[in-house]
Image 1 (cartoon, rainbow, N blue to C red):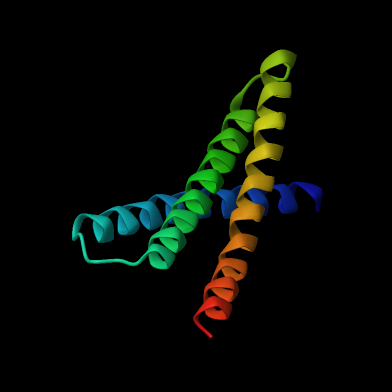
Image 2 (image 1 turned 90 degrees about the horizontal axis):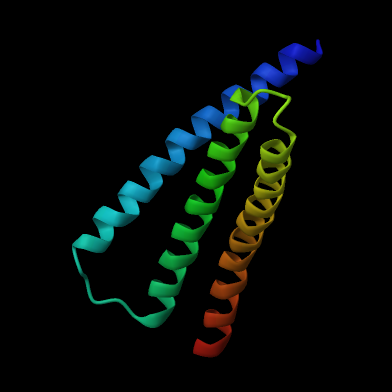
Amino acid sequence: MHSVNLFCHEFVVAVSCVACILGLLMLWDNNKQKKQKDEAQETEEILLRMSFAYWLVYCVAFGIEKIVLPNWEGLTMTLRITIALSYLLTFSCILSLPLHKFAVHRVEE
């Protein structure tokens, strides 16, 4: 039962890694079109890019941690710290998106 849950989590992380790459490519392609943007929209795009980038770092570090041999304790500890920090940074960016929209909406009123 435990190995099934672990496999499921690894599969979800792998799929979300591909989704992050696609999301970053879509945002990069959208940026290439150079539309006139106001500051609020630009900040929202930056927060989205940061969310995707931080989650991509999480996915890559998680994958490397699963591949690395367990006797490399120094590298394993560094990867775990990277995983924790990227997870928290992703959470803070995702939390900042609606807060930013709320603040911009409040200023417009």
